[in-house]
Length: 70
Image (cartoon, rainbow, N blue to C red; front, side, top):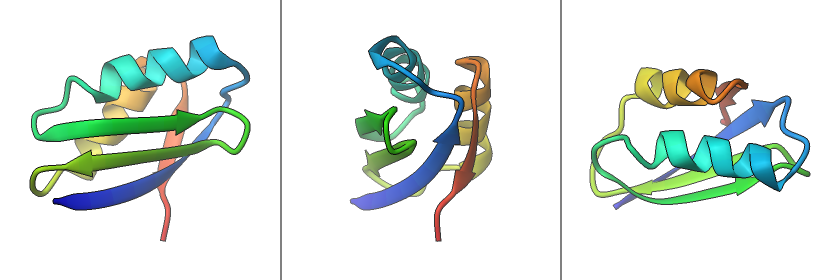
C-alpha cells in the first residue's frame, strides 16, 4: 500500500472536500481519500502505484488545482 500527499488550492468548505473526494475515489486502486479544505491537504492510500496525472485530472474535474507534495 502506498500513501501519496497533494496540496489542493481553492477549497473553502466541506462541499469542496466532498467534490474532490468523489472524483479522486473513482481512480482505480485508490482505497482511502482524506481531504482537508482548511489545510488544502489531500492524502490518498492506494493498493499500488497511482498515476499522478489521473489524480491531478480528478482534482481539476472537481474544480480545483493540485500539486504533489514532496
